[in-house]
Length: 306
Length: 306
Image 1: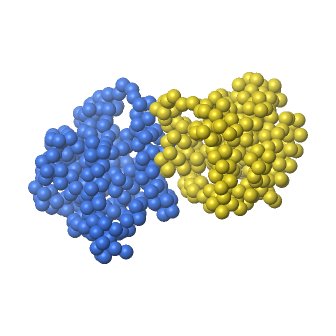
Image 2 (image 1 turned 90 degrees about the horizontal axis):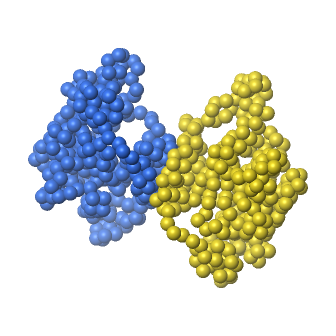
Image 3 (image 1 turned 135 degrees about the vertical axis):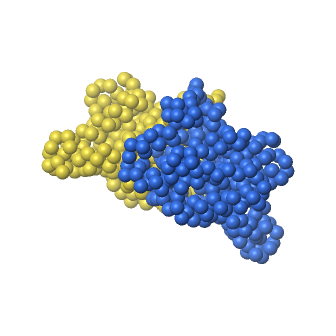
């Protein structure tokens, strides 16, 4: 089959949902156009925004940086980046180095923050504690806190993360299955926290399937960190991911229809859940917190006991 | 293991979600109590109701009749039943005969309505038409229409169907995956149509897993029609059912958590979707209809062409 768009015989992909065959150049263009469409439709960017890209060096965050950079080149937004060093030996440093090289290549402000500097403990050290709660619980909370802090320190007006279509649909399904309607109000292309201390988060890749992002970085010859986290484990997310991919085989548009349905549900839930809500400040670190201590500091307190 | 409740060593089931071991009597009691709890919590019955049970003769509808009959014995409600004969050779008659015997045993008013009498065509005849839309599309629409009509003719104030936990969770997930938020407003324990011509539908077995209903009819020695419809086919529902059962293996409460989450989402969606809405009448048969012809009559018109 030749490229559906330009007739080039060197086709690199058959698109799952549309059935189109695309050559390299048309594929790259299709991804970039689709991200730009998401940005416009969901109003992810405002002129003058300073967007902090959460840059791990993996395929999703590098693609996010690469495509958002086109808005920077048009002087619509400014970009900066933050990389969180969780302290995982034989894994994280490669990602950090790749992140540094991308930031230098594009000439953008880049900050590296580490769990060790911020909390005095690495993820490797946490995982040696006898009663730890599993790597992902800690990593998620600490990373979120540090990225949010960096956003404020760097004067960012938005935080862009690399969540792709698969990530988003998995999160939606997990919350449907767990009946967690409170979390369902927090997903979506643009997350405005009720607490103004949290910077608005945007997901420009939300409509791009994971495998297409993998192909995009190969097609664009972007250097990315492809290794998996050594602490990645068989999780509920993994099971849900498997199930959605299986259903997608015979129903190639199912990830998109799930997303569209969710967006309508989210709007309805938001109306329903509207209530007075304001965060206090953590008495220890001053970050926004629902209780006396923020989640990160309460983890640190617990870990001291072990 | 002995029965968790009474110590009887003759255990017949380990309950998926609670982990309880139950003997026959305690199992029967647990099912009946749970249905009664659903009836109370969801306010499915009002004193003086005349409930029409949609009685196919299968395990779900026989169980519905059996347990609702306890409310009739307490003079809280009156019960009648309707059985739809779709016209499926070597299949339906057995179910009809079983339904007749249950109605006679309990001494309740029972009506048998057939597609042939109502529309001049059987499901077998429809399936011989070259361009038919698949058995389930026709069967669903015709059955719903005939049951609704019977409810009005018999003066019923509620229609009770045998939908169980598995049926309900499958329908919820199918609509999540298809992004069909309009359908999501129509599921639930009690369905009050916006058009008052449709009798309120209730699902007393909505919290009982399918396999427990199978065990209930065996334990109670209730005669039921166990054969599968010869037109049953590999369907999206079947795929979704498989996926949910697979996830349930490691997460035994997942069907319940999905249900609870959905109930909250439904409430939110209902608020959001509230709008003026009223049905006209089908110009041919006088049943409620969104268009000039109701769905059943428009199927019949189409079939005439084939």
